[in-house]
Image 1 (cartoon, rainbow, N blue to C red):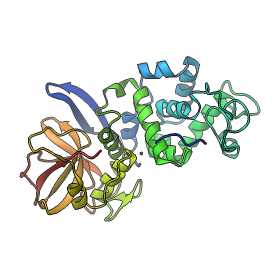
Image 2 (cartoon, rainbow, N blue to C red; image 1 turned 120 degrees about the vertical axis):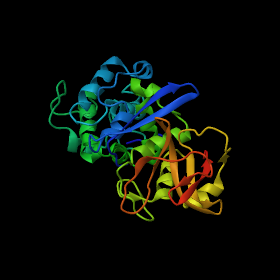
Image 3 (cartoon, helix red, strand yellow; image 1 turned 90 degrees about the horizontal axis):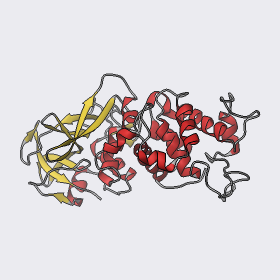
Image 4 (cartoon, one colour; image 1 turned 180 degrees about the vertical axis):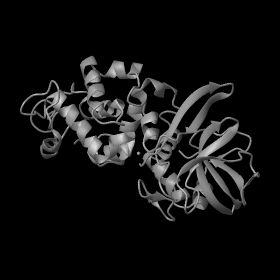
Length: 329
């Protein structure tokens, strides 16, 4: 598959954004629906109506095909299939080599979903409604259904690990970030996504998708485990921003958010005993009710989660204090 541009375990998390008197406020609700609800919700979910962006970019026949194929994999948002099809071939409209015949310029992939032939053969059956017999890598129906099966086999089923399934499709974190960002723009509900397209917004969405991942000291592996600064470093890496490894180093790197300035989704929030004793970091996720919330990997025996914190510098948070925030990128 061609590498284009540029985020993994998920849990029951849904987000929605509402307009408030001072701007956009992120309302975060932790659901009891079980693993997988979060990222599907972030990407518009299986039932999301196509946005104006989707209908403008995607031919109607391909749009319907993405929606129909996604139904074969519970938990796979059609928007993800559509984003992959857009990135790989402009939804089959590209005239580059390998889309309609032959192989791509790298001599590896073919068809509207840019499969390597051997990989396509692993996912081309059963023949979908409207497909051809034998399956044809250049046939849009066969290719899109095969892509849905591949994503499903690599983590998309029940929304368990959608970013991981996209990474298995094309081994590039930059590709994953681009696909997920594009997918968010294709679902009508995502027109309200906070800070869409910004580094902080991308990092926050990526971090929210990790809710439920175990805390592991020194952890920095999607689906494996994170500690607090491993989570924030990985989230911003998915957004194209390099952060140092420790909470203290991330705090020192800045740039700081002024103490009297409102926090923005994606800002890093820090805790400890003082500016030279920073021991914890999370990612600001907005407001739930009248309480600021963050996504963080809190401590051993816990999981990545969304939890409240005091957003006034100097206020206590357990045995630590809220020290302030930075706005990377």
